[in-house]
Length: 633
Image (tube, rainbow, N blue to C red; front, top):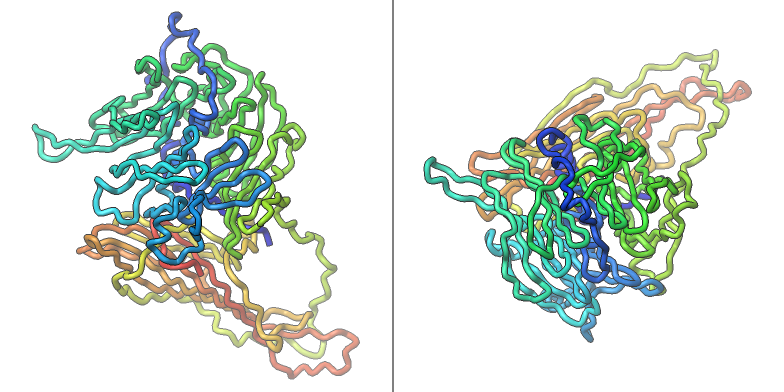
């Protein structure tokens, strides 16, 4: 079975896909900057400074919206399960706290744990964001003790040597914060009462705050009323790009800020700064189109159209040495497609191509600014977690093979790199099939199993949730043991759907457990299946809020001998505010009735013996949304 590795702390793929589609539908005619201005045509993207600049070098709306890894000169810092950890090459992974007598992640006393410099008392890991600036790590995160929108989050500063942690300020929820050359940039969503008509009007502010001077005074860079959409800002050199999408796509604003002069100019989306130059893909109306790559100035004016053609959905990333092009979006839409990365040098000549490993990451890998790339991982089966590391000096040697990540385990005292290789699939060669023709002395009996189809429901049952709910990684669809399960929810409806897994679905992803039947019920090696009965019991838990309380609505669906799709739905109670998450646990009872086949040379065969029924009960879980209840099964 293939090892399942899950990327931590990332935004939902459905949000990512929506934002990307919004970008793709923006027409060339209305939103592409005009001809090159001779006075500005000489502007370049500038240079990258490791200690002060935003690390993620990319214009795509991806996991970089809220970064979970930041690079240091000889390693990285990252967040995992409420703690910040630091890794330096050749050493072990350690919490980012240098206080004597602190037990860090081993501490069980809540008050002492709060005092640890590495601890984040966050509401959700997905809401946290790490931003390195000089010798400090700035962390924005949503707090677990939030009482309202005004104190929903906070900004803290942690010294990279773990010697101090300071809460700088409490703040309302902001979107997509980044730190670049001493300033914290972010979006804020606000509402303003309309004077001429009843109701409120949305507005989006793009703001910045000087963290280098530590004055922490908010400045509004751009304010746009009546708008509700925005994409993550990105920065390179002295430039910061940002864009907003307004009422049903009719008002689009793309801007670039000159951080040295404060001047704001019209721009284009999708600009990628690379080696001091800027590039973007040509505009297109369809997400399946192949378009040429174009060199532009910082404002998006086209200087040259290059022969290299890319799909509209390809993502561009750069690290100052290489330009990376991945088909991550296509991989999200069709996971059966390998996630491929093509690498280009400074002259835009392709130097390599490799397959990204099966990390479960649906957002694309951060490329990193140094000689190594780091990704966090967690193995759900055994609780193992740590880092995946990629030595970029291997680029130009892979030539279509899988990217050779190495594993740095959190419990490895020596900090040694261990090769990471997905377990090889078992041999596809099949043994010669034995004859299953019945013995001439008997005929096969009918099955004794009940093969009728039925779908039954029980519930709903509502009860308050007393324990603290934890936000889990998204796993809104799984396949195992011939069963496919998918979950989803809207504000007033939560659901789970099960059906037979498609034939092309890969089995054995360790998403459930398959119990071997007792020895005496195992069928003989040579046998015929007389009948098969499959019963899928889905326990649907739909979480919703009523004021400050969290409740769960439980519904059970039992489907016998159906191929599906069979669907369990939970409707929001009339006195509730809205659903916030959904979880489905599927118990799959598989019964098979076998009849032993004799060998031609078996003189003791008794045609009156009874068929044998074998059984197994795999369990799979599937969840979506902000919360799930307790540990995963």
